[in-house]
Every structure is written in C-alpha cells, then in structure tokens.
Length: 287
Image (cartoon, rainbow, N blue to C red; front, side, top):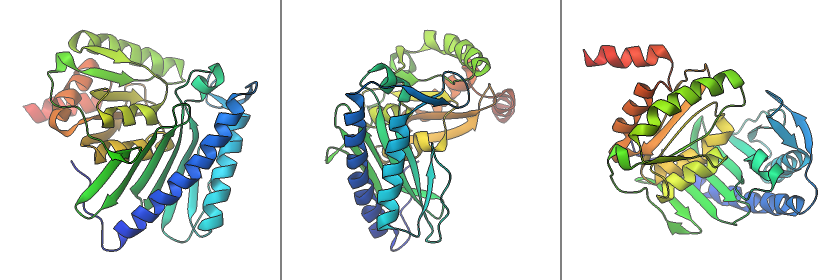
C-alpha cells in the first residue's frame, strides 16, 4: 500500500530530515570513496567469519553520528557498528555506514551509505547514496503520501509483468544454516521467474526496484538499518514491503510493486522462503 499521509507538521519535518540525511550521506560517501582508494582490510567480524567490518565502516558511522548529533543533539541514533544513542526528541536516525561491505572489501562498486529518519517509530525520510556511482536516492513523506527521487528526478517501479518475466533481486545470510534454507527456496523459485540478481546491497537492491531495473526483491537475514531508507524509497516509488518470519529463523523481507505484490508474495511462500507456520496460515486462509 502507498505511504499514508503524514500527520500535520510531520511533512515539513520529514523534508527537513531528508535534506539533512542527504547532506550527511554526501560527507560519509566522500570518506568511504577516499578509503576505497587505499588498502582495505577487515577490522573485525560479527555474526560469522564472513560477516565483516572494515575501519571505513567504523569511520563512516562515527562521522555520520557526529554530524547528525551536532545539528540535532536530542535525536536518537541506531547504527550498525556502534552503540545505540538514546534521544528525547521523538526522532531516531537509522544508519548503515556502508551497506555492501563485502563488495567494498573486494573493490566491487556496489555499496552505499544508507540513512533513514523515524518519527515516533515511523520512517519518514530516507537517503541511499551509491558511493561508487554517486547516485542519490531520496524519499520523504509529504501531504498525499511520499515522493522518491534519483538525483532529484522522480522515479517509479516497473510496470506489470507475468511472474515468469520478473527479474528478482536477492541476497544471502551470513549463517550457513540459513543459507542452506535460502538455497532450497531459491531453487524452487528460479524456474518460475525470469532470473535472479545478487548484487550484495539490500539498500541498493530496493532502490533498483524503485527505479524499475528489477521487478521484485526477497531476502532473509536483513536488519533494520539495511532496509529502513531503501524500503521507504521503494514504497514511495510504488512498491510494497512486508517483513515475515523466514525459513531459517531470521527476518524475511519481501518487496515488489503494489500491482504485482500478492502474486510475488504467493510465489515466495510456495517456494519455501518463509517459516512453515506462515505458509500454513496462508493455506488455512484459502480454505
């Protein structure tokens, strides 16, 4: 469904927050771009040996936090790499300093700075900045819904197409057990669609869906900072997002244009991406 109209006063705040997010994302992207010209090394690992953090991730997040709190010291900040910063203003920033860190580590030019702003728990503004390409995706709530742009120009999802002609973006968890479940589901889905693309950045995948260069997206194991900004961009461009329990026990994100969402969601459930009780609930609803 389209983004609901914001409460009175929220639209002006959302536009202001989007402007600040873009300003800060540009500064962080410049830092990351500079670090990419040097030798990049793994600084630490998180959930598994392949879930890596680089010094550039940490430096980017430190810069983003500092700039946001310098301008809005009473806001909260949730970041991927640092501790949560509590706030009192009702605004919380959700930050991924480099979405696509493995791409960054290998020199693959598909990674982004992602910054979203929530007001009382609702995402009202988001920026995803493709660091290598310099492309800026921005969305914010406004009266009548939301607007999504790429480099200042409005964007929209791809038009209707049969499931067999849908190009689907996806990704894989850092957990080997979850990857096994994802692999089985993907094998079941693949014969029913045009093809898949695995680019390595949830935030950019959602923006590619928003601009119509892929038709749908599904991935288990995403975190809030991965999709907060990109999800708003996608919804503002005409898509719907839904979070479900995944077959591997992690959160499953499904996204597709509003006009084809139900068909794609059904295909995802039929393929086994979601937890068994979700699929059983769907079958019960049919009876």
